[in-house]
Image (cartoon, rainbow, N blue to C red; front, side):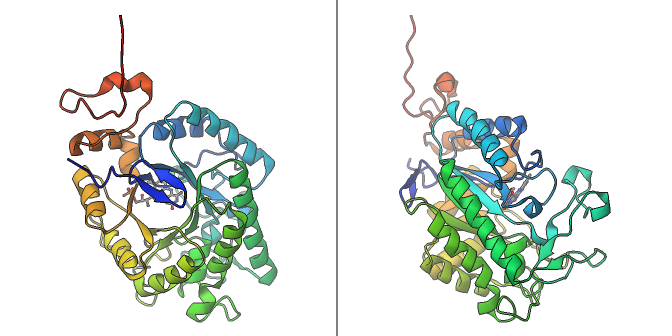
Length: 372
Ligand SMILES: Cc1cc2nc3c(=O)[nH]c(=O)nc-3n(C[C@H](O)[C@H](O)[C@H](O)COP(=O)(O)O)c2cc1C
């Protein structure tokens, strides 16, 4: 039986063993933006998952681009060194797997408590900072407003993304994803709900897409040409008068023209008024629409939890790749079980070659064992 989910895929020169991508997942466990031993353990687990690619969590391009004090950063030498050291150990103990990193700016969602402390905005007087945004409109009506960026601030943000991309290249990371989703800064520029600027960066569609496209183009130039660069978008705000799937398709056409290699198709996050029809694969149709309209490689994400469900998404051409988050936290060996269920094969550490179950004795590729 041949499986679409377990067929190889290429993003530029980068070869993926299969179509399963570990979705970026904030761990809120960094110190001053620096990776800690928590990351070492977390990355090790997921690098042994046999997914096709692992994506490092939303990684801030400056200290004030972090969502929380615990967010990972890539904005100084200390961040770069901490990430380099932990990742090297995690990679050494796993079969080869491409590693992507998601570069992000939290915008008006910055200066928040970590989720397990309630996730609320931390005021300056309690050790927070004043977040920046396209317009001085708070995320929630009762919150104090962010500072609207001026032209100099916008230029600085672009430079920070470029500097972080150069650090990512120096670290030897394989792929890079720009976070333009979930109500963070670049999404805030796209959506008319959060962007009410009257200069060249707000108002018309052309103006609202300007900063995300400028950041993309500048990062594309700084990031090695043979390495893939993708974008995560919120394909719809799920709010009347907000960003729509038609807007997304128009944006993706421009991103594709600028050298974008994949669209990671998420949704929502800009407004508490959003009405999301949650259910299995609830965002897959957005990936399908973008793929059909633009022929770009898409990643579907959101409540994809079953092997047959993931297989059908790829086999039907709804998406080229399937990104998964919570199901992989719950069971980091999800791809092993999916391969066994679909009659496919995965690569595992050789120390685990004896683990294949009786019902799927050939699930581990190249397993050779001898003893006397
Ligand atoms: C713990 C956790 C952390 C997350 N952090 C990020 C992140 O850093 N960047 C991002 O784009 N999405 C983040 N997400 C969203 C996931 O990547 C994913 O899009 C979402 O959870 C839906 O997929 P799922 O149903 O497979 O979990 C996070 C989700 C979880 C559960």
